Image 1 (tube, rainbow, N blue to C red):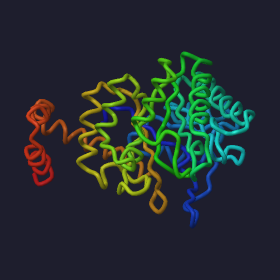
Image 2: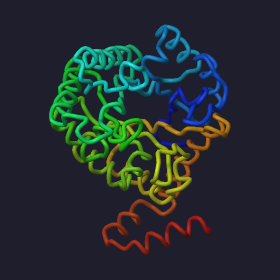
Image 3: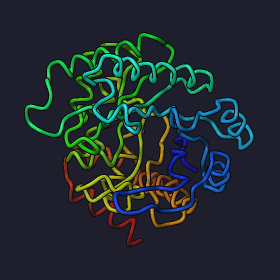
Image 4: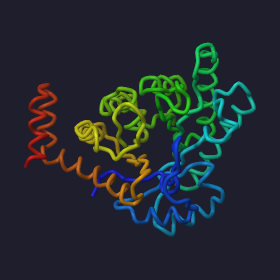
Amino acid sequence: MSHHKFSVILGFLGKLNDRFSSYGEQRDIAAKFEVAAKIEGIQGLELVYPFDFENVAVTKDLLKKYNLECSTVNVNIKAESKFHLGGLTHRDEGVRKEAVQYLKTSMDISAELGTNMITCCPLSDGYDYAFETDYPKAWKWFIDGVGEAASYRGDVRVCLEYKQSEPRHKVIIPNAGTTLAACLQVNMPNVGATMDTGHALLAGEGTAWAASLLAQAGKLFLVHVNDNYRNWDWDMIPGSINTWDWVELVFYLDELGYDGWLTSDVAPFRIDRAKTFSSTYRSIVWAQKVVEKIGREELRRIIHEGDPVDALDKLQSIVSG
């Protein structure tokens, strides 16, 4: 059993789309919950506003029926056409206000559901071409919008999730450092970061390093887990590609005192949904077992001495037996 709480983003349990095709079955929210109930180790669901909250009472009843928590409310300010040219940084003040209101409404819902945390990946905020965007003005709008939302409810955490690109070619918060700068500039205790392991890999970061940077500033609020080849946000099962990075991150999360959710942000386009997310959970448990088998004190010694050969020998011995 994992000693971190495990959740899944509900939207991945229905039909998925890429630029070329659609995959899986179209499911209503009740059918998605039925699939969720089959996932090994699941304790919660990350629910997306507005799409998973057409009827808040129905969503609450489904959580109760399946004995699941809402881990986080994920605020989508990118999918609807009104946000395609930006949400918090749209040139139209009215659209910017609507994006902030999405955050505020989500904060109210999160408090009602008892999670008291929202996360937002502002993927439509950014730019594609030179001379397209007034960078200082866009950054000010972004900071002001986040600050206004955060000040609305001090009892709800606001997590900013960074990503290098997609759908914007250059997203406004592309990496851990920029996200931390935004958090520090907003300067409110309830504003922090969501570190998505795949987004960190895509940005060329070490996931354990990025987690450490954010945690030391007290801003690591949420962790999304997945994997990729560092060339695109493929949303694969964590540890399936960057295995040792994954083990190192799991080790460091405990060292850093992170006790929040590990939320699966895996996109099972061509494979069974429940099977994929069960594998994600087992990957978390496996990495924790590797750490414990080597021993935390031994790993601390290796890090203290700075000998990566010792670390590799230990890790390989776990696999070879």
